[in-house]
Amino acid sequence: MPPSLSVLRLGHRRDRDKRITSHLGLTARAFGADEVILAGDRDPSALETWDSVTERFGGEFSSRFEESPMSFLRKQSKSGGTTIVHLTMYGSPWRETIPSIPIGKSALVVVGGTKVPAEVYHLADYNVSVGNQPHSEVAALAVFLNSWLGPVDNDSKFSGAKMKVVPSAKGKVVINDDEE
Image 1: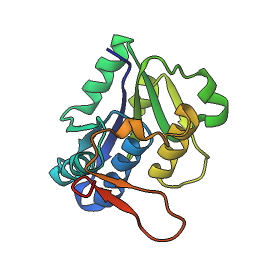
Image 2: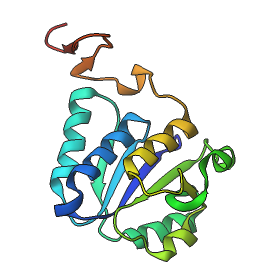
Image 3: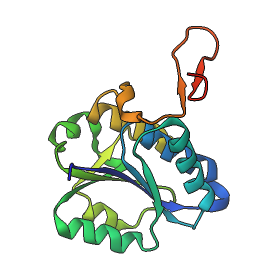
Image 4: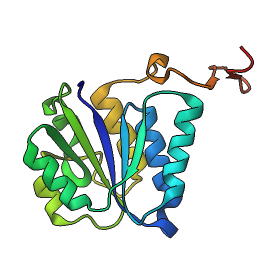
């Protein structure tokens, strides 16, 4: 089985974080993750959004809810088979840290919403900061994944699409599978 890349959204608050969590999962998908895992408040609408986009725009991307995220993280850490990367503004600078993070091994990128438990910092193999100023976790994830994995402009990652956006300098060009 090839290595997988999962993003764990830790501490989702349904009423407060709905849009930002939705964007975090969409960014994870677009920038090369295989899965997004939601933890915190149970929120079926986030999972439905991610699944709907994958169904329409293609690719192999899954989403699920994790009832016990700290237990899940402990298990991942103990197994040693997954590299845990925690994105935090308190971590080591991303440009210095990324070269040491292995690519050929399964990885779990942890992105917090509410205050992250101190234990996460100890369970993570890498605590990485994309800047040390408050900013969007979506931006941090995009910068990190693009810098670590490289650009994901390759359409082959998104096979089976029902819709495809065609780059255009002016206007919107969308091809639907029923138009081809």
